[in-house]
Each structure stands twice: as C-alpha cells, then as structure tokens.
Image (cartoon, rainbow, N blue to C red):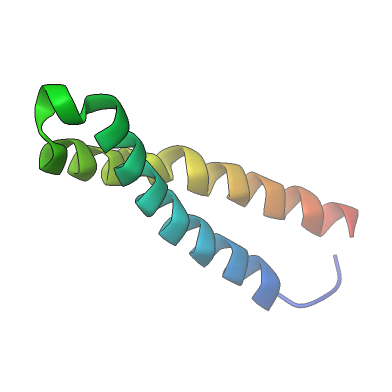
Length: 67
C-alpha cells in the first residue's frame, strides 16, 4: 500500500457531494409527484449517500490494495 492518501480522501469527499445531489435529483424524479418536490429531494439527499459513499469507499480500499 503505497502512494498518497490525498486522492483517496478526495474521492470520498466528491462521493459524498455528488451522491447528495444525485440522491436529491433521483428523489424528485421518483417521488416528487407523490410526496412533493421538497420532501422528495430532502429524503433523496439523505438516503443517496448511503449507497454512493459506501460504494466509493469500498472501491478506494480495493484500489489501495491493488496499486
């Protein structure tokens, strides 16, 4: 495990940011009509990082062992 920690941390920070925006957009697209756009965006931005961050975190860990 060699190299710098900075690219891994940058990937994790970007994963959090983009998964929040992606979750909000997905929430509005899927549940905006039923729940209202604001509530759907709030719920999407809360639940979006659950999958996005964990996926990138596992990818960074695997990449650390490979490279």
